[in-house]
Image (cartoon, rainbow, N blue to C red):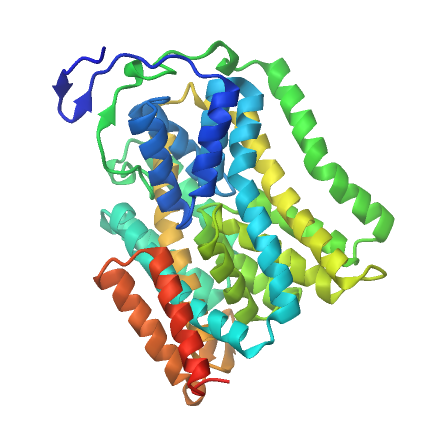
Length: 468
């Protein structure tokens, strides 16, 4: 029977009975199927199910795992699921939890990608995506406000965010350089004991009851399989590096480095190593590289892909599958275009997510010993602050691409950016975007209702002959 003792928001309860991997499978599938709304919503839902409802893991351990995942390149929500699955049921549990978190989004984005290339030029389909883009802009601005409100607690954090924005938007400094530089500043500040760097993670956990680690299935002790050993670390590194990089090497050797599949494998493998700060942060860099350097898709198509990712379960970074899909579709080589596109999308997904399992299985045993480490917390805080500036850059880039039909490049020495041509302003896009921003920021409308409303508005404008 549960006890009723409570103290300072904490709840003392009898520890739950152990669960098998088979039982955990259905819980992870439920989480994966309902994981809409970006990393903040996904992490909040995991907290509700795993901490408050199932009590598989306690508040302190959940936040410790989240802080580690926030420091990693890649989607933190998927990595958090992998981490907790690994804590509960070893490597098999991590693969089940992390794999299921990806699967619904993979299938959904693949189906929508097929529809997009086959029917995307139909007026009503274009109208749906016209509406989606307005909502995407509002959702990205919401992410700026949400993460900024939690991360920018002092002037140092605000300065890091402002500097990151200026460096990326006006000077085209590479995203990895900005984020790694912020992480180094935070690590040094945290190690020196400077309190301004101890402001916690950007997404945090959901509000609700605080469950003590000792009252959960995992407890507060270190599981035997979570104790780090050099032998296990070498084995994990060898297995997951081979799964990640062997296909990349094979493609480059067989097809050559200039082949589209080789370029997809190499590009997204690079992204897997430097995509710090969550989906919104990395999408700014990926969008600019995929659009302006590789020419795999147009800027407005990137916005369409993000709209797909926002409306389907799973990590937002799954939009990279859409990028790989279009890249291979437009340069299929000897393959039928749709087959090449499908393989390109799956390849982008593989090299994006396999490294996520590597980071967890290799690093989690060691990070379990680093709870309350001030240097790690400082690095996390600084990275999160910089990410606010990076996401603001993404929001402004999306706004320019959504609201204006043309831009004018401005370049003076290292100072360079794309300025909107105000004569090309799309008034209907502006009105729809403004309505979505008011709904999201003022009335706190959810992601899915906002996306549905703007999509219907786009269809209404099309049927009314307002947009073509």
